[in-house]
Image (cartoon, rainbow, N blue to C red; front, side, top):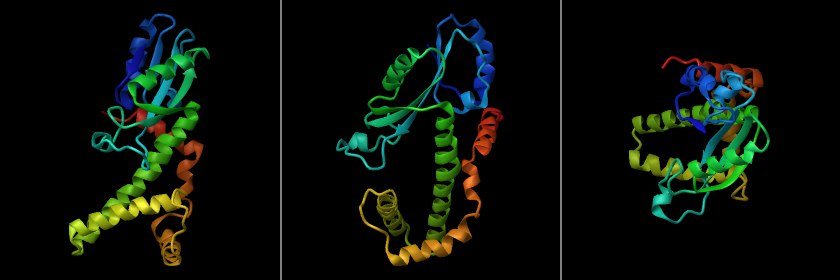
Length: 219
């Protein structure tokens, strides 16, 4: 087993050096789908490429241990789910790869088996290109509210509480709708904040461009 716990932009260079030297039957595990989806992993029929990535501890959880509640990334105290892909290799190697991934990211609840392309749709497209961008803009808005004179502690308490409640409503955890006033605010602001064709970031051809850029970035 070789685990590629290195930056995406270095995986192609490292693999081109080490993969020809590996023993037949070796499993090479990547911790992100970018390199596999971008096609920078050297082809070799007698080794296995397995990819796994943590989902991180869920926003809505049942953790009561204070240390688990502050384990933001998982793999220490907080339970989390993971995603896995048998990118290349015999079917029987999937179970081996999942077992190792469960050990690395423990404590693990569910392990979702996906294709490498499905993993790339989730990251970078969904959680980085889209969600991280949106949260970055929210952070900029928070800083603007503070600049306008609203006391910082009040901004934090109000925003973070509403983020949790809003997420519970929008993602169908709360069993309640947003108010009519809130719906009106969204309808008025959506066209000002987002381009009408914003969903193109989720198109496969743009995801392919994104992962290729990630794997070729300068370090």
